[in-house]
Image 1 (cartoon, rainbow, N blue to C red):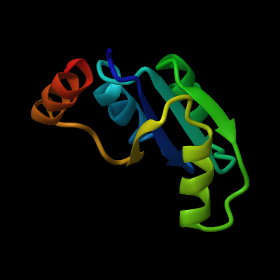
Image 2: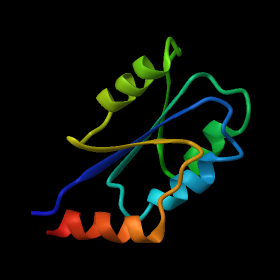
Image 3: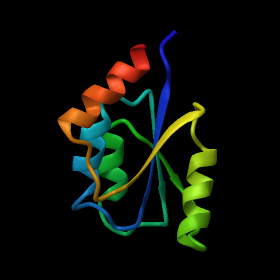
Image 4: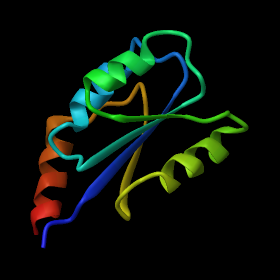
Length: 101
């Protein structure tokens, strides 16, 4: 049985980073959710272009926002990233191997 993986990302005005982040998880994610703290830049538009579920939620603290984002994931296996992070090819290959094993 293949493992389903949710990727969660929290954002606020991350138009410079979010596209690279989402592109890096495209091959391995079965669910991508971006929880945004009401960005005023193009973050929402870029997330839509990459097919991510985009949910706005008021930011109280970093940990609270991360935990709230995790609760929005569709699957129990979750990869939580910051918007300025992107997966290496080596890491993507390792995740694919685990998902199919």
